[in-house]
Length: 106
Length: 243
Length: 206
Image (cartoon, rainbow over all chains, first blue to last red; front, side):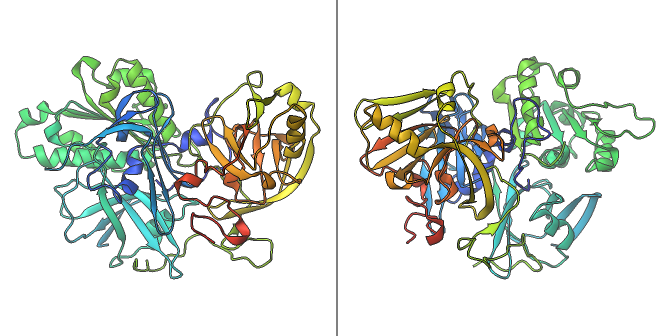
């Protein structure tokens, strides 16, 4: 999982692109989310504020190859949640999720 | 690190002693962070290869030629060195025997790693139990590699399949075939999946892991074949160099 | 503090020897693709570009109309907040000055700030002064060829004097604002202005 940047679309099938091949699953956001949430969020269910689709965060698409972690709905591509990291802070935006349903540990 | 195992020319397994490691779940990963003397840091995620039942933590790493972290782990790290890691991470792409089967695993290249943790856990948890227990949680693996000498855990998979009739291991090779090869010899496609997978009515638990293009193609095909999308869990590894 | 990993060096990171590299940057010969979402696909027949004023007026160009506007070729260094810089990149496109002059002639009311809006929902905010006076273009070609989708094609904003996240890929609109509302990254911890020479990467950086 060594994320090295591809720099061209060479070798990709028609219609596909570097950005598409760089996308990951919700698991890829689990690490940074574990710095914020006490429970694992990838098993939580998210309701997309864009289209109403309900999915485990682990089943969302993650674009994390750049400036932050952006988690999108596979149905409509809307941003469900996103995390930015500065040297001293984590910025979390969950406005793309109408709700998150979490099963607490106990 | 306590031991290094060379799996293939480009793949090594690091055996780590992690005091206080909570038992992980098969499928989870860890984040490894390296720090240079000037404070520069690089971080990457690696799937745990060992079963939760194992005494040590195993990470299997594929050396990417232009990688920043993997060549350090496969070539530089020595027995006795320390590694900074965070985890276990992930509660979605996980399987334990309690979740039941049938279990369908589809791997491309180094995508085999988290799926191997699942198979090792299955063997450890059901090994002592009788054949009925194993047949109650049957498992099938479809594993795509470029060449026979690049198949990770090749011998162990072979032994596991021999010891357990409820486990079926299928290989497909996409670039070079050894002499006398009778297995699949092409990229995973609809026909291959239809042949290997259980019918959707059996409601298998499916885990697909490997390079993003392979994972997306396999997941889409399984859904086309009638499998419930909620039952097909994916872990994309991103692109891993030229196909 | 993390313990040092014995023997780890990381990628070679040459520090700025000449004045050409802003602080904290390294030169790359590649052109890395950073992505926050799927690559938008739009046909040239469906594509348009708009400048939207503070009022209700809007100036609009189809691809064909856009192609008849005067084009310039410019060579600039670009600097990404993820620390890579690329020297001497060659672009061809329409100066934002040209677009805003046309828009003004059509009655579009300007504001002190603009929001660049892209296909896929990406946004980034800029002061008007930073996209005028020969500092910004809507670029259609890179290195003599039509801009490929993974680098923002068919058209992207090009504002090389600021960190490259301000050069919005897949740009479709410049919308005037009277407040400096933060865009996609500016609202997630990144600096509102983004001057690489003052190393303004994150919110709070001087």
